[in-house]
Length: 89
Image (tube, rainbow, N blue to C red; front, top):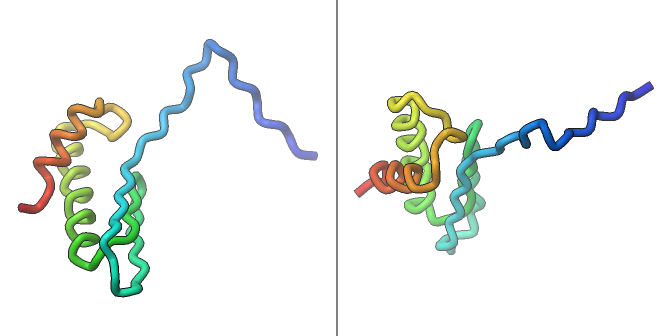
C-alpha cells in the first residue's frame, strides 16, 4: 500500500530550489557536451565555451564556500557579482 505525500499548508514554507544552468549556443562540431554537478548543469557550447562556463561555475561555488554560504542563501545581485568575478579573463 503506497502513501500519498502530505499536502503542504500555507503555513509551511515552499522548498527553495536553487542551482545554476549554463547553456552554450556556439557549438558547430556536433559534440554534445554536458557537465553536471550537485547544484549546476552546463550544456552545449563549443569546447572553449563549455570549459569557460565550467571553470566559472566551479570558481563560483568555491567563492560561495569561502563566504560560508550556499547557493540558496545568495540573492541574485550577489550571485551575479560572484559569477562575474569567477569568469576566466
